[in-house]
Image 1 (spheres, rainbow, N blue to C red):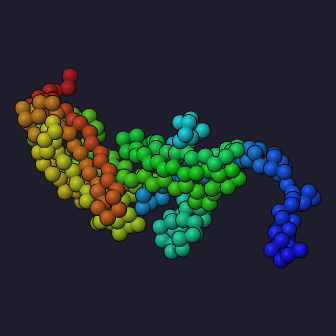
Image 2 (tube, rainbow, N blue to C red):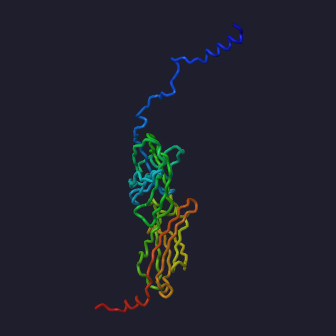
Image 3 (cartoon, one colour):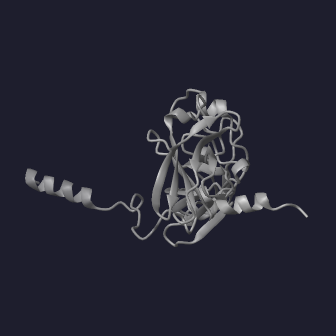
Length: 288
């Protein structure tokens, strides 16, 4: 046999299939049915005031809603409950990026467990603080939930921007007498309920806090508010305009804005204005 013929025979022998080593193309490896079973998966959501503490029971907590992005179905909704957290741990303790920020001590959170068969993209939405609807804010994010991969420790953290600004005096809708010298007093707190004041963790010296006296949508006067330690509030005097100038009353608006961290809060209320003659007439009336 010539050498070229020997080479052809050798190559042909290599191409002959060996039955004991061949794997039929129609056969599939056996399925592990447990891989397709629903797997409990826990997600923890924590709603916090930006630059401050966790929204806890002091401010009514926050509502958390988790929605399936693909189907738009609400998977769960509920209220974040618990404490605002440890102020020293949250605000003053240095930590590495991977270290927990809010969960090293007990703090409010919302927890849910789902039986998942496959990765699910969800939208997580938070609204709060629930006890102060006039100051309520909303934040949302999307995240993948993977079967068996729990999200715990700090969990998914949603930051709400803003302040709780409340006019303490005069009381909203209280009638004001024209030409009276009235003290405007307002309190400012973070959305977690912590007081904003000078030299504190939430330093009012870094925040623009001022009032506005308005007639309709026109600002008549801007009032610079100063901190009163006695009342833990910010104050400024103002004169009540004449009823002819404010036939529909006045509006007092207080604004707190921190340009460094983006927190802004507004509180406002309306007041009817009465003629000063009503006061004189009432003082002349003698009791029977």
